[in-house]
Image (cartoon, rainbow, N blue to C red; front, side, top):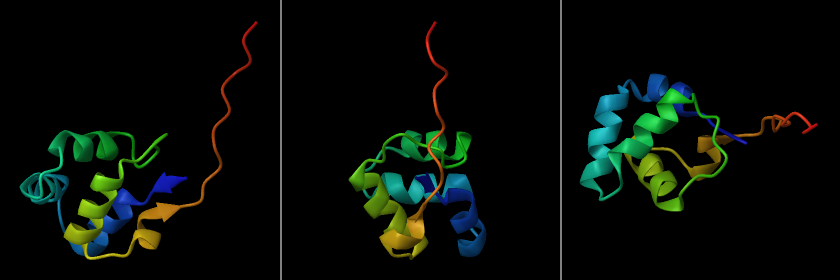
Amino acid sequence: MRVSFSELLKSAEMTTYEVAQAVKALGVSDQAVYRLARVDGAVQRLDLRLAAALCQVLGVEPSALLTNAPVPRKPAKK
């Protein structure tokens, strides 16, 4: 799974900073938004409070937040 963060930012015409400040006002860590932006949505887990705040700030349903993407495999240990 992948969070469609950069695509949603573009469609909402918002910057990462604007989203981070709005999420922070809702009581969710703004650092989580910056981490999400840094990895371009490739996350291993997503806090539901962050997901709810992002949906509220970006004006989308939870289904718009996630995209099905292949899970990268870790190299086998030798």
